[in-house]
Length: 442
Image 1 (cartoon, helix red, strand yellow):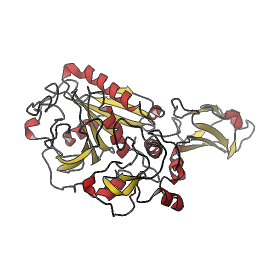
Image 2: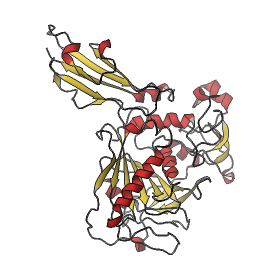
Image 3: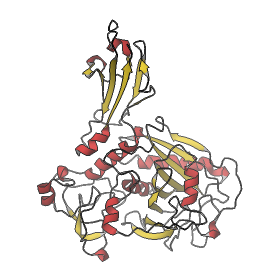
Image 4: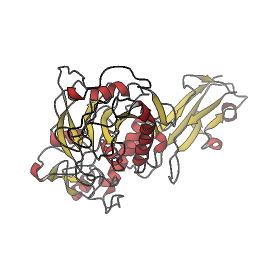
């Protein structure tokens, strides 16, 4: 569930990238036949012409061309929601909504298989691997009249599908566009969406990132991928680097020349050299000289945010630069913080507004970290003093923690925090903590 917290601007996507490139389209107040979630007529999208090359950008229509409109009419099963991964209540978890396009009624089982495989590809990349328990994944069935999507295998192919997905968008073969208004209508059928991924029924490599979409439903951006292509999951991982991690792109193009603007707001680009970062204790200075999962050590590598000169990135070649790579340590830190911006480190079905008796028991939920050295640290306190006998217990008996013969009111508090060494910034670490307090009656 989308839960804004201190230190992050809710609904703001790619703040640093916006500052660096100043190239996003302005929102239009005029209505379109199939309006986008923001009422825009166009979107600024990122696309990937090849699995190993650097992405490019294009301005595309929010609504699909009229010739791709699916005819109106209800279809059995259209809009049904199926849990792919269900780890807890939506209020506690980061909810990913996967919507299929180009799947007929008889192909919905294949869509569910493709959705599961895409999620497996995403969780094969850290920090998703470790933090899988923070997520719910929901599949939304969008029943299409035709199987497949337009532009596959060739430009002249036109198919009527629920979301009007089509290759050759903006005359670019690998750019896989959708009707964002239709995506919004299907996303609304699922539990509260934090991320939206459109999986199209195609084996053709391609995809897109709609990173300027801020939906009224609360999700930031839309990623499109091909369900039958084994490399398209990387597109979704990169795009969530923008939407969840608020990370900028780390690639550049020679035609952009020198960057002369202000210091970007994002965590992974800077106008400062490594020495300047260290002297000013700025951006990723805490990581300088450290080994990074994408190779080499953290420094300040010139070329980022599209500009070959004047902007620096933390590592040579992370997934924010080239698909198929890992997040660097700066990116991992931002992603983990982004996860916890939506998912709770501590929750309970017992309302903190409840007045407990000594006969009550309280159960709390904390995420399980996959393969981590240690999980979240859970502690219990009575009137501010730790009840050491209950360390790590997810269920406690109130009477055992509060003296039975003591008839005073008390405060029972549970705290949890993630001790990961992958987050060093104190401001970000504050997102990794949770606390719940109940009143124990006289």
